[in-house]
Image (cartoon, rainbow, N blue to C red; front, side, top):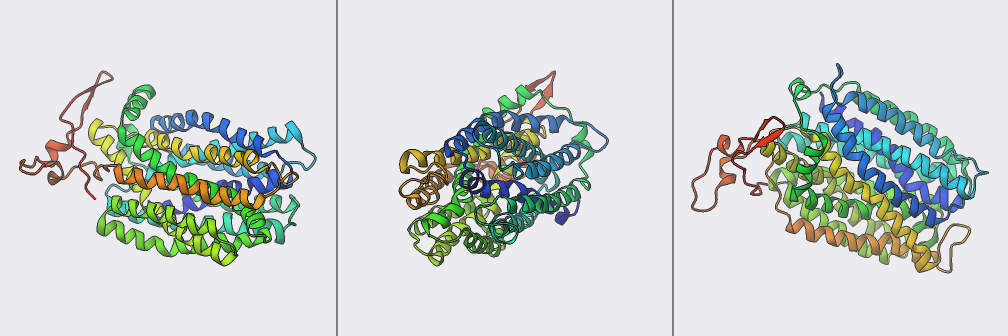
Length: 470
């Protein structure tokens, strides 16, 4: 499958879900009057549901056997549900209020996130599956992240202008409806264009697998799953706070029209895009773990000037440093997760990319719940409950929401990244990677010999070492 065609799937995936994330507070809370506490509750409840459906979808994908392969049927269904859910999400009748409004919001939020999980679980599983060595994998990941940044530019930067100026007004929902239809058509075309050209390895399609509970136990007992997963959350949760609160940060903290979010978000995306090939080059020279750790430092450091900003120019400068870290994590985080999957294959001799990467998806799904709880706390701390009841100082509320909360979580990510000993890349371990000083190196064949599956149980072979090989 051509790298560019695989990568364009990320463009279609980025548009719907990020449009929802960046506009939910403005559309439902500030315009339609949904209580921010209801918003936080829905996002927290969804995190529990998503913790179950994400790995289940990945496991079902790994075990799917059709003439079209394992991944393609799920990709097609997920694409249709996701784009249909995007339209429904922003076509909430203006007459809805109270419980009815909460119910509409909850139904379409959950539908969109579930469809996003369905598509993303299968799409992400294809990265280590189609691109076996880290050099090719880094190139494919860099290209798909570039397409994602284009999707971000549309979903995040263009949306405020389209919804409040081009197709609608500052306090009207009409612009969101037209924008949703436009985005749904664009995203569906990209998602299906990628999905209908997937060509999987026939040997992997025919491969046998342990049951869901056996596979889940193996993953849950893997310390790298927990450590890398928590680090992933520490990268995504700060961004979720920014995406959810940036438009109201511009409105209340900077005292500017919401449409100015275009310049703030657009400049950050441009910085991330320009820096992406630099980070990819650093990965190829110094290895993914080094670049990953450095990116966390930039991410955390940028929230300090962003919190202190008092003008659009200073906010752009602060968020620009955050964008440098974001770009580095786009270039590296999926490679770190792929190394953990490679290590699982070396240990157990099974390709369960769908289940493993979907299990990692549990940590990424913590973003919505954590951001929801954090934003819900603005009522308790600052008296901001909705656009109809903003409290005495909404500017301070959203400065904390997009500056303080993300900084604390990103600092935790820096600490975790420094403590984690990242596994080697690839399903074959180099002989030098298994040697301690003064110990003769074992051959790659000896080191990488997988365990064999017998009658549903794992027969233990020599366990490979996990020395970090950048």
